[in-house]
Amino acid sequence: MREQEYRTALITGAPSQLARELALWLVQRGMRVYVTARDPEELEPYLARARGSGAQLVPVELDTSQVETARERILALDEECGGLDLVVAAGTYEETNARDFPWERARYLIETNVTGAVALLSAVLPRMLERDRGHLVGISSLAAYRGLAGRSAYSGSKAFISNFMESLRVDLRGTGLRVTCIYPGHLRNHHAVWGHPEPFTLDEQDAAARMGRAILQGKARCAMPWQAATFMRMMQVIPGALFDTIARRMR
Image (cartoon, rainbow, N blue to C red; front, side):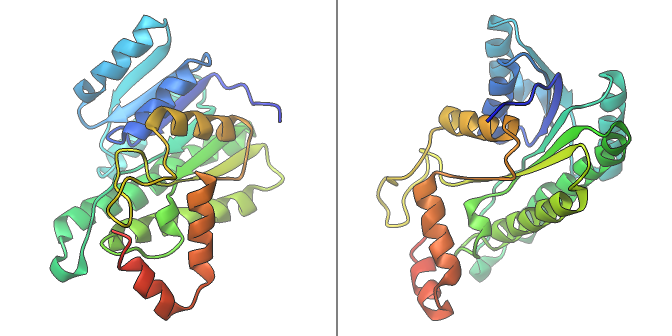
């Protein structure tokens, strides 16, 4: 499948190492990539790697939980660069166990993964429609397929993103815009559901490369790795009682 050629991209969710690796993967393909963080100094190791190859990775101080300020900054960037070609809304991860529900962490997660993502994508959407070109990407998760133990707010936020991106794709069919939703699974530094190293994992660089290729190929969906994605799709169709038994072990 022929890959799209983009000049400019914006990626939020820089606290996620996966988002940062995706930014590096894109700049290596000649794009000017703006990557956001509440504290841009966190990006210095990635900026150093980009400078070493002559790539254009631009840090942007941005807190997507501050919605109106973030939207104004995004629109200013769109103006400065002559129109963003690609906008990627990533997010953050928090565990939220119902037996001791951490409301403050859950609120921040929802503000970032849901409100922040919608604010970002909807800010540039009207301008992309005017230009009749552009690509919107939402980073969901395999955790969006069903509610997982200890991840109520995270699974819920990613399920929202999945349905939001799907609705955008349906609404924008027939325009010059593309919409992609990415469903990454566990990365290699996580632990297995049974307490042992997980067999079907990706390291961040490999996952970022797979994500990048799916985006540039214009795929509507990309779930990875395929083994874990297949397992989670099976979880969607099993009876609730059986799912509850399995899900309690998936910590």
